[in-house]
Image 1 (cartoon, rainbow, N blue to C red):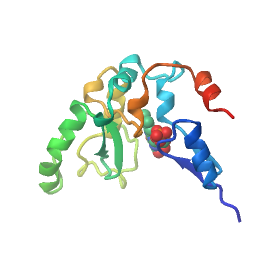
Image 2: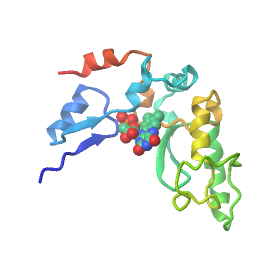
Image 3: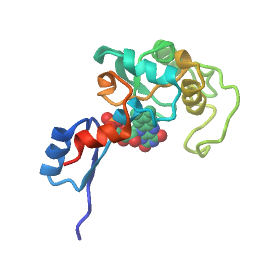
Image 4: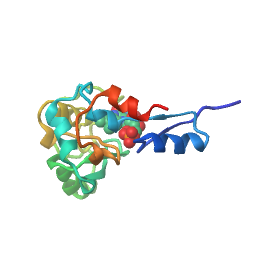
Length: 162
Ligand SMILES: Cc1cc2nc3c(=O)[nH]c(=O)nc-3n(C[C@H](O)[C@H](O)[C@H](O)COP(=O)(O)O)c2cc1C
């Protein structure tokens, strides 16, 4: 049985695509590069964080359910980083690092236990696209700093198409 493998993570240009296809992948997934397009429906202040980011501004951060996620540094990531040791030292029910205004039930309670999460990921993601980019979780791939202009999906496809 042939199982197609789609590579994801850090794919930016034609040479990246050729590299992973050459290794035998059936395709690639690209996310971050398309944030720098007019078609991306995130607001300008969200895209602006990418335009201003340098390579040193992108780090792994902890999601509420313990999985790593890469994000652009801001007041939100600083708050989480500074608060995580004290947060972990508490016994359940823990006081979150950032108080949770309202649970939106985005995850099953067995996956996201309200008594043991340091912050609400829905709230953090919504902040990032509702003009509170300081306190928003701005997910970014490793190449987020390479967004230096807002272009179009067509221009990117024209560049990467064979
Ligand atoms: C802004 C943003 C939001 C994302 N949200 C999700 C998500 O909700 N679930 C998920 O599985 N992956 C998510 N990803 C990861 C992408 O689906 C993708 O696997 C990864 O970003 C690919 O690497 P690249 O961004 O370097 O192209 C997100 C990525 C970005 C940049």
